[in-house]
View 1 (cartoon, one colour):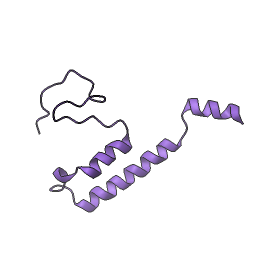
View 2: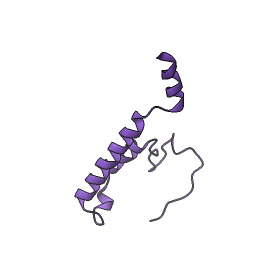
View 3: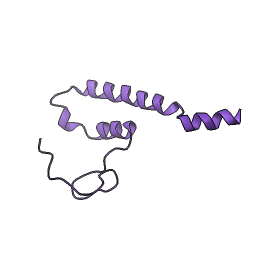
Length: 79
C-alpha cells in the first residue's frame, strides 16, 4: 500500500484532498473501522472485525470512565 506524498499540515485538524482527519481517540478510530472495513474483508471475516470492534469500544469506554489525576484531585476536594 502506497502511503502517498508527505503533507505539511496537521492531519489531526485538517482534511485536504482525499485525506480524512485522523481519529483523536480509540473510540473514534473504532467507529472509522466499523464504517469503512471493506478493504479488510478479504483477509478477516466480518464476525472477527465486529468482535474486535466491540472489544475495543468496551476498552475505550472503560478507560474513559477512569478519572485522570486532575479529575481525581478535584473530586477529592469536593468530598
